[in-house]
Image (cartoon, rainbow, N blue to C red; front, side):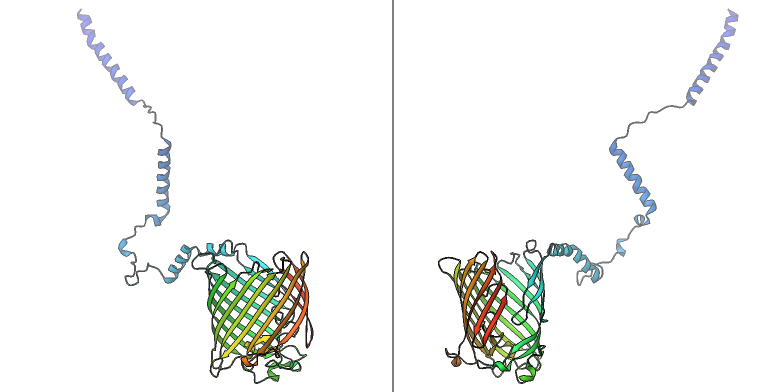
Length: 444
């Protein structure tokens, strides 16, 4: 018994030592902890946070702190944002998207070739006309023209037509056109209805100018307009050496020495009820224009001009036979003791008036002329016509008489499409001979 009790403390001590060693071993062993799964949203947030922190480390501008007190303040007087005028202008230009608008205006440009002359006596020539695609921008039309002939006649122009009401230019439009023309062989025979054919001469006319007009269309057939025209014209010796030079043969003509610069306010009214402008078979047309012309500078030019153009078309049982008539008037009235430049006088003798005479055969203060045509279709696409013209230039109304009228007659052939007359060949007969006329489009 005593021996067992003596051995008990030894056993207890050994047991305690074993327990202590076991506990120490368990505490020193590594503990495995399974990580919780991370959602996709948390992964994106952690990635964005990491990128931002890296950007801040590499970009010092992101770390800069701006003091609001050091920022520029708007000018209280003008209430304009800070920055130079150029900067503000560039900003406004970018915000207006002007480049995008210009791309629309000039997208798919339309180019029209032009054939023929640019007025009587100019000869045959070629040209090109450019317009923007009006179907994509109906409120704005841009145009440019370049046309030259083998006789060195030249016509150039550029224009813009805009509708500020955004109505597609159907009721209202503003037109601005600049022009330049060179006409080196214009013919002149003298003044009045009794000018001599032996006095044929030629002069070189160079004119530049611009025209601004506002046009209102209250109805489908009626147009009203007002505008301002400026022209600067200079006269030189003609280039046709077969004939005399007008400045030398007629040195006393008004405007022959220094030309003329004229400023001309204008108004007009137009009534159009033709069934087809390119190939008219019925309807009426009338145009009346008035202008007040005054010289700019030291020259003493001043006159009022009135132009009348009235037409009528009557089908004779069928559209294949048409009777067409026209009345043309050009009247000038001097202001006080002022003069009229000779190149702005009324003229007769061209592809539309007195077609049996030479171009611009008669010059005068006033002119009155009439045309009568009988048009008939030979076969589809080809037509024929017979015509007679009468007209007279005069200074005073008392000089206008039946005995003073000049008359011509003739006929010709026209080649047509469905929409217009493409080409015509006419022969005109007058008391001074026979004239062969080539032209594009119908006479009137």
